[in-house]
Image (cartoon, rainbow, N blue to C red):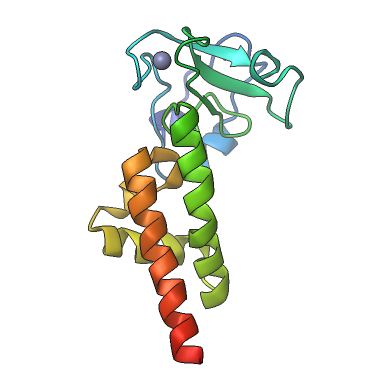
Length: 165
Ligand SMILES: [Zn+2]
C-alpha cells in the first residue's frame, strides 16, 4: 500500500531535520512502513536524526535515519527512502543489520543468475517462505527470518550448481 499522503492535497510538513517530503517519492514506495515511534528491539523512543550522528559524517544523498534514543545500549537504526520521511525497513540492531547484509547476498546472487527483476525475486522468496509478498523484504526481516531466507537462496544456488555439473 502507498502512503495516503502521496495523493492528498494537504500540505506536507517535513519532520525535523528533513528539508522536505516529496509526494512523487512517496508514490514510488509500494509497501510503505509508517515512521517508527518505538524501537522494536528495546521499546525506547525513536528519533529522526542526520546520519552523521551514526557514521561520523553525512552519508548518501538523503543523509537521515531513524535511531533508537538508547544508541549506546541498543544501537538500532534504519535509513530512509530518499526524499521522504519513510523508513527503508524496521529499526535493526547490529546483529539484525549484519544478518540482513550477510544473507541478502545469496538472494541477490540468486536473482542475478535467474535474470529476475527485484519484484520477481521477492515473489519467489515470499512463496518459499510462505509469507505475503508485501511482508517479504530484507529490510523487514529479523535475524531468524534473514537466516531462513538466506539459507533457502543458498540451497537453490547449490542445487543449480549440482545440476550444472
Ligand atoms: Zn532500541
